[in-house]
Length: 208
Image 1: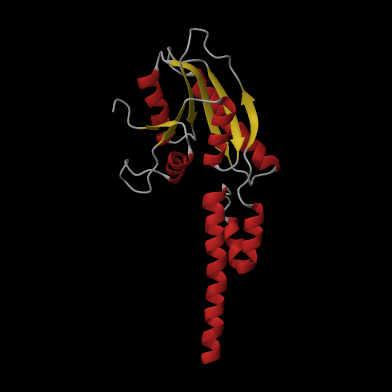
Image 2: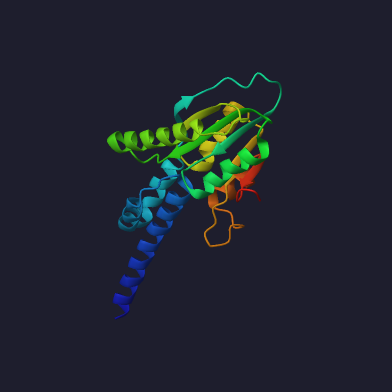
């Protein structure tokens, strides 16, 4: 019985090590495919060096469409992170409500899964492109014509990479909490707040 107990304990430790590593890899590394949990559970501690080696997927700016900054004088250069969710829609509404007439450059960014390849990657990038085009075409008067970027990678890393490349003044990101309270920030918003040296506006409900 004692030997069986040790075997079960070793099995639990094996699974726990692999699953915890997979959880960190998925949530913090930008790898959204849940099959990584299966890989982690099967490989156990053997998955640790694989996850460390791959680490975070370096952001890849795969579809960049730039507009010239507004010629009407100085103004804020603003980046808005979008994912098609109500939270990111609120972030864009915050820009429209608060910054109309004050922006010289507006950049809309969405991030795709770095694990996808071939047809799946192409399909997701097409969906991302359509979403950005639809949003850019419906922007209210008074906002600068939007540049758009589709980036593959970890969301926070991708947004920061574009922010650095374009030297924006302000990042706008939606509130995404794990519970019902809108005041709770999601992991991407929290990480941006911790890592970015630029001003950050957390999109809230329209009119608030």
